[in-house]
Image: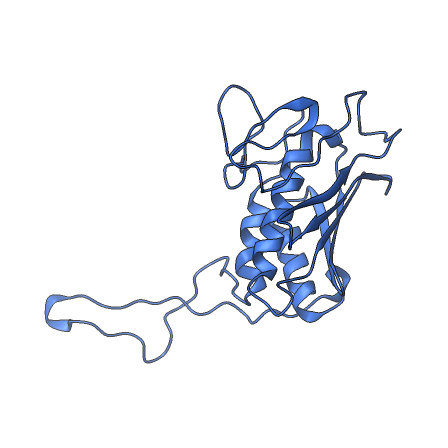
Length: 211
């Protein structure tokens, strides 16, 4: 089975969404910030702050969306490009750089959507629904879904028929967060939150590598 997309892209989005970025390397101490108990030899040696984020509008239609999309793209470790658009709904377009079975990554994409909803719950768009579109390397849609924030569940989670990345399999039951800890997933599995036994891991417990 092909590995799933890294959870790191959805973890980083939480920091990116509120304007926080992590420095990739520590710089020299800030001027005036060295101190401490000199008599005991203790010295503060704080890192320099990272550069302020500069929105790249290739990743979103607003400055905030662009920063979130770019951070998520960087965190995917080359597996995907993520573009976020803010409107009446929040749209997340995920463009895979490597082909993967839509059924293999369905759980990951569902949990990604939950995390995105959690992020926007901290903003003025807390009531906005989340629309998810996932595309394979030929830019063909392999997943489309809509998450209702008012219902706290998916209105639909579809894998288009004939998708080149989707093997023959039973229809996908629509996952939601109203039936925790187990939620129906492709093939009738109920992985919930990281249950053992070879099932797909759940929210917050996905592998940190590439899919």
